[in-house]
Image 1 (tube, rainbow, N blue to C red):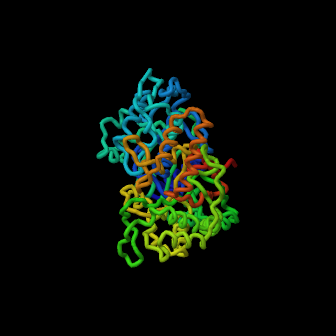
Image 2 (image 1 turned 45 degrees about the vertical axis):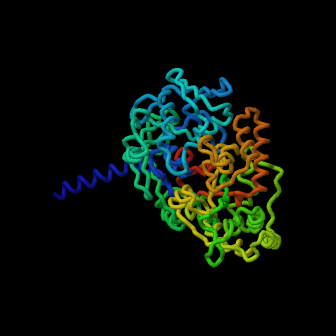
Image 3 (image 1 turned 90 degrees about the vertical axis):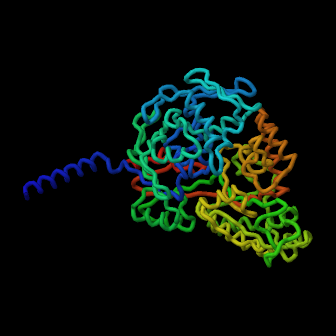
Length: 530
């Protein structure tokens, strides 16, 4: 018995030594993320953390590079063959994880299923211009649009392609179950789906049949650690290799740790506030809770008062601890259509108080102020600070910090009257943001999907619609910058701060190439060469 035990122990030690010597243990990458997917169906929601996780399993037709430049992916090339027709040439030799061939049929199927399965934060915004999909041959697709659609390639960076065989027949009622079990989770990406435990972890393994470069990680584990302190603690303890959105307050300490390194980037995300302009707001009252004769947020003087009550430099430097910058419009400076002529917004509490008095609200009013608490760096801190700043001009903004999983469905139901959340212009051009946030809510036109609180401006609508069909880039960008100027004056939404982000990692194990959209992808994380 002792001899047998000795043999088994020796054999195990030899196996372990071989595994270490061949680097097998180093081939597992563990990422500590703040939030994960809401399903494994990539078409379920447009939430950034959802798409981020699933980019590793499902390829897109066009890839968004680290600075949002358009790059070939499942489509090797694309061109407008008519004012309302885009033609996409597809990559040959691509295999799905089940070994089946990727063809034009999968592209057509993926585009057409989105409107039938999209959930909260609908992914329909990425295919809203599509009228018809035609298969020319197995590797050529023509997309007919509802008029000229210059930004269709930008929209298609979020066109995830699923297997038309694996996802056939699924409906909104059963699609999530089929994808979450793995049955339908068949993509062409560099990693295959293994398992997902909601609010816990997503496990992936390398797909050795991937058409692109071979990935260094045999296994990827994305651990959901929404608590900032817990993410940092697990990094320091060596339980994760890299963490996303390292808290700004911890960045100096993390940089001084000899075992760790930190990477930072200015992102395309910014915080913005949405104001309820409906006749009967759900959460606006007098300070004693009684009803007001009319909605104070409908008065542009009140909206201006809210705007200039905000001390954006203080929010960026103190609430965001340096990982932010003041914002004066709904897109960041690198986005096509950014209005360079708009001046910075200077805080002016005295003027804000006068505007409130002139509007008939010298004593202020009460409103529930809802914001996310776990989605983007500093959201809770910025939201809390904004509520305090509004108090200085008589507005009792009752801070209502909510997890993103609670906040977004409630916002989609138009239950809130004053909100703040993050939005990133992920396509690199302003029409994506403006057509979603400030165009009138018109489902028939597939515009204004996220404008649910009553803002309507005919000039804004026309400029957005004209820009969406203008093929001349300079003319299109001028229209979009004009929209930015009007919105800055109307203030249905108020830009607050742009968002920076930081990653911290084990210095001797991994490095990362940061992306301006904050996506943390296993493909951008490489082992340290020793």
